[in-house]
Length: 335
Image 1 (cartoon, helix red, strand yellow):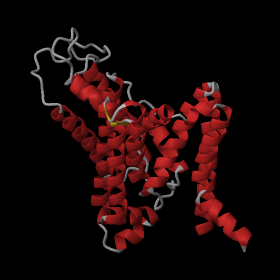
Image 2: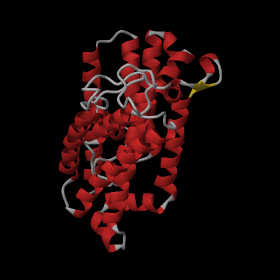
Image 3: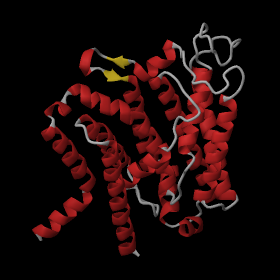
Image 4: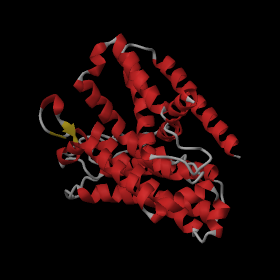
């Protein structure tokens, strides 16, 4: 009986054990990894990835996928950055644009992300195009649109820089002093995670989302408007990608049309490792957060102790395959 309980405990908490083992292993090799500044850096690097992964979780739980996430991040980054440059910057994207309230370009970028997501949802729900193909098409189209915008005169594909301090402060500012300060970007990620948890667990949309992912036909029979819910789910995901793009521009102090490239794969990997089932119907916010932290620690921690980036890719790939294999075994066992 004790063996059965132990197996159940290990199965239910495997992801947290993996995260703990990663931290302990790196800390044993180099104890300075546990310094407060290191933890702060990990949190900062994880913040935008958390928001993207939470958006991806909405889609994956419905048994869908979203390959356009990274390109929506890039479009939102370029849109917000292009409108928030200092007035005397020599290569200003809009030379004659008056100084806007910082909220306006941010809101516009998030709304553009929402619209892109809504288009994804409409194509999937109304045209019955498989999510993989629908979002692949959006990924290509959004990148093309972003590249056209980025190549406009007088910018002509030059990296967008010279961002206003009131904008970059969102990505680099903090509350408190010294090493114990809390960056604004981390606070934003925490707030988003709490809101998403509420949506997942306390709202009708969240309930419908799990029902659609669990069995779409049963969801239809029970009276759920599947098309309407899918459109809103993809729209919310798009808005979160848009917000992440804004934060990336603010954090790095610039933007190019290649921002966000391949971020969708990292988000999918973090979700899957965090327990979000690729078959739909299963996923939690804490699991997604831990999934993101695992990959951030792999990237940051192994770089910290001098492990080659190529070994990091191998380790990440093995973790992703193992997570999906475990997920598929669980799905097969349920069937």
